[in-house]
Length: 386
Image: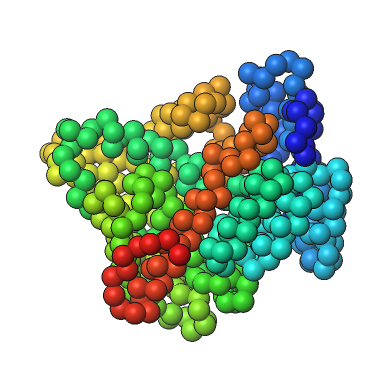
């Protein structure tokens, strides 16, 4: 798009990195392409918006070929310079950078320089300083930069904000949030978890908190705001240097809310996130089981009344209304679709910060680094951005 008005009928998208997460985004892009007229129907009739998966790139030729069988693209780039060749393609308007974290910064800076809008999977980078370089490049080149903090496009998170607001007086004070997450190790090279690079510190930087539960920490930050202090214990049972597989953290927000996190990678065939949110007179229970048919389940109990479930359809409809797109079909499943929709919409609206600001990625990174620091020194860290 490169700064031009959005009369353009096609937004050509290139994907760099044809791994597991790329399948989710490619599927979402295909849904957006097929539903574009309905999604952007509120635009003037002269403005025809259609995102298209235009190109694929990966250093591994076999991955590109296998990926293209399911998600064919007009152009395929293969080999060591594939990502840069895709970025240099003048026909491409936006890139999805879906490679190991170690390579994010160089790709982002090059893509921004070439005027490409950027969707960047989390974690954004190895350091807060590197994320700031990305933000500076976004501002300099006036391109959209959105980080894949998927919880910010998850309808239960939005609905949780509504529940907290609507029942503030009825339920009493929020006393504690207890969170646990168990995920099968994602680096074992089995069909479910093929990302072997996640056990390599040089490519991944860190483990379960940095690579996985960054989502949930960021989701809580999106609701409760700034962090006041952290205290944590981090362990390395699998023996991979710098790649933690156990984190127990106590996080206090500046508004007084206490959030405990227990994050684990293990060998169990079980992927499940659980939240229990306690008030003086009520409780909320959220379950997101990666092996279940439901994306998430949210239950509410007030005093001794029977627990009841908030249906996903209700939460989805509320979410799309909140982001200003109530006409979007809430039957289309999944937060990847929603975050990709918001990325394309940021391009359409010429909103370079996007609703999912890169600054959010920087902030959660700084909180995670404070958690690691707390473990190193065995003390509470009064949080200050790095």
